[in-house]
Length: 510
Ligand code: HXC
Image (cartoon, rainbow, N blue to C red; front, side):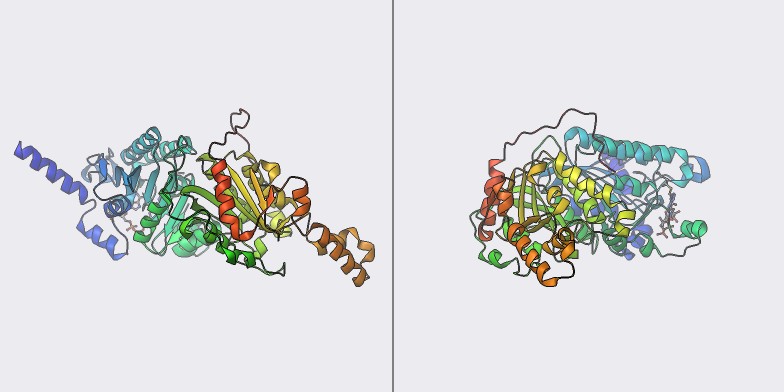
């Protein structure tokens, strides 16, 4: 018996070494952790149980028959994050650059299917050079199998991808179909084809960083939902995110005991909105003062900063917060903001996470750049997402709610459950100046007259009471009491039931 145990220990030790000490040292020299070190940091201590440690590839060509490494470049299994089950796969760059063989793909598909069955989130840690070049079509087939599982699990279990090294080809398409992508600054890259191929095909010279670094994807393309300083920070933040999410669409998100009194008043909110309607203020201040313990996990904080999306808790329950940010482009809705928020709203709706929407929006961004870029379709995504969402929806208008953007931002008309406004709210087709310039064009040459018209328009519409008189606003609330009113609204909606008509699926304007 002893020799059998020793054999097992020997095999385990060999598998744990992956591509060997030299390559592990290289990995560390680049500031990256190994696949196993990452899993250990992501999961609760001693909770990881590994599958398929002894799986090997089946390739023979290009000398591969003699190069077998147990595990074949990916560490898979399950464990817990703060006691809740998650499934995980972690690509091992020290083994054939983490590239994907048929056997490697089958290991990932196995944990994807187990996560879906168990109703637990799946987290993929990527550090990989795409298809295993020596395997050809078997590798492509493996990717397609993974993509298929990504799609079947979409909206069923949360899928999270963390990009922790150079990732190309299939190792970017699979993350692209998951719910959240996070990157590590300076050591991770995502591109369909790397700089060498770019040079050959387009003659463009570009660095890895400028083509697909964390700053590019978290700030410019919006492909990534966040960028972190190093592996450790990324893994710690993923643990934090998982705490807000349910295991699957079959559950409600986890509730936690809250030590933050829901009756907490915030007198400073009474002066948050400046007297001058053209002056910005920081909407994040409102978020942090309303949610439990000022704990807010922001998604895509560097992309489309004119809208804020993220997770928080109110009275211990997870909520998704969507808020216009008057500090950036006056909080206007443009293509990027609409795309970012639409995807976030759909995620929350798919996973039973109630939505808190904070509105201060001057409308949609005008101009050829936006129109040529398809603002109509992108803006419609957000409208569509809010309209189809059946989770509890609580909306607060703090200041401007102009035009179509008023409708879009979880208005009563899109089945908003509780629609509140602060006394400073202005609900109108547009700002007073623009409005009178259109409807009183004849007075254009008479500034005094125009000013008089503007004041009259303001007096009529620059308040929440017209909308409140029609029942579109349920109540005009005092800013200092916002937390209490919002918390009570969500409490009353705990057992909300609402279903959309049967359909195979909708046809959101993609
Ligand atoms: C087999 C690979 C590999 C691959 C890297 N390696 N990529 N082995 N298949 N795709 C191996 C290398 O031979 C090397 O082995 C080790 O991994 C480390 O690679 P390096 O090149 O030394 O590392 P680095 O300089 O850091 O560059 C990393 C890299 C580069 C940027 C990822 O290796 C690279 O460009 N690889 C190819 C990327 C690619 O074009 N993949 C195919 C995409 S197409 P040794 O033994 O020396 O340690 C695709 C199709 C699916 O994925 C599409 C589905 C839609």
